[in-house]
Length: 305
Picture 1: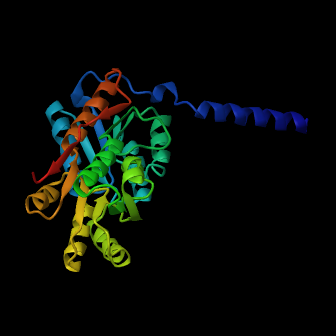
Picture 2: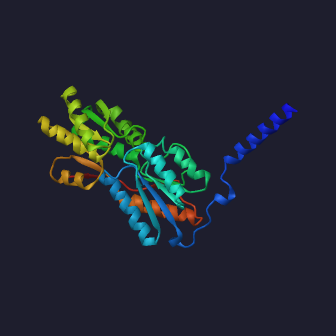
Picture 3: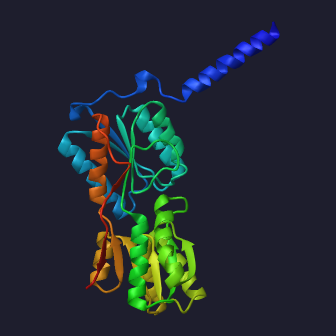
């Protein structure tokens, strides 16, 4: 008798486990014909970065033009906070989630939570490692890294000694920009040092100060974003050295620094366009339309010339 009870309990647990892998039919969202009925949750990695402020603005402008409601949360570059923020958005009954991950691995649990109750997820600028994402709206970060390397070769020649300032470890943008850069640099440049500065201007300054002391012959720096590039320029100017710096994003401070002759170049993205495209992708999914898994926003290399 005891064996029979144990067997029944085991079968029940297995059945419940199997059922939990798919969202119940009631959780799957119905098509939203009236855009005014749509409520979108936007989770941004940090609003302490002009790039992501522009990305947010792109989302808000497009949603408002379509009559859709947006709830915005700022993860403040804290991956644990972002997971909690997304869970809160789910509890608030959003119809779709737009997520700009702080960390591509950590955000996966929140994406899977949304999957389990049928809330579609669109990621912006960075991907999620696990879970179903309807679309990733981003620049081609690998191509952007290659553009930066090719520019430095054109500017300085082959085998020039270069330092790389990396973004947040674990972020897909960090991996992809680094991959693109090294696709070219490993063959034609001499990358003498690389270190994470977490996409942060202040960290870019302090990391660059240390790297300059250890690598006095450096000729150029590739920073995975403009904020780190601008911090690196402060350190370089204080040292009195002549080092070219190229960033990534194309934010207003970087464009002004290029005009002033301080920043050599930037691989410019279009964050407002990324935000707009993400809103349109979410709308299409909610209206039962197919969307591309990868939606690219064009890049442009900006120099003073």
